[in-house]
Length: 97
Image (tube, rainbow, N blue to C red; front, side, top):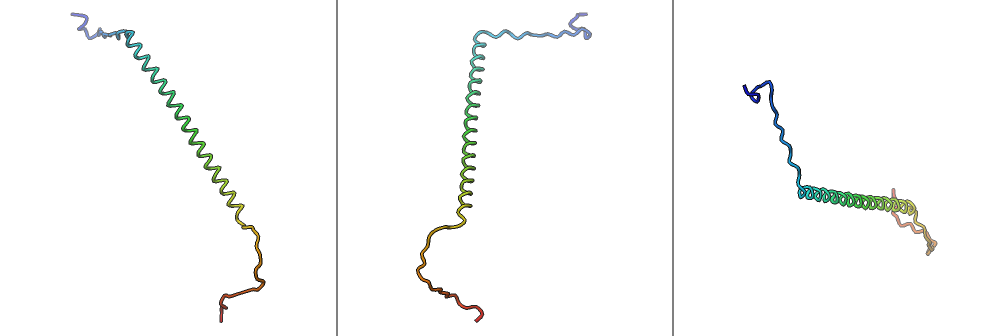
């Protein structure tokens, strides 16, 4: 009986991956470097966009707070006036008559 056919002694054939050539290594290194640079720029742009949005949001909150404080201060109208006539004129119709 042949050893390769014996069920008690199975053989597993392992094939080794061929070594990558110099050109393949250079291409993969260049692609990895390209992905790394693209990720760096993407993160940088995302951080800048986040900072701009946060700045716009904070300026909007400051503007609303300022507007509400001014509205609260302007509840009473102050100014100068001059009395033209010293006569009381009540031209409303009398109720109950």
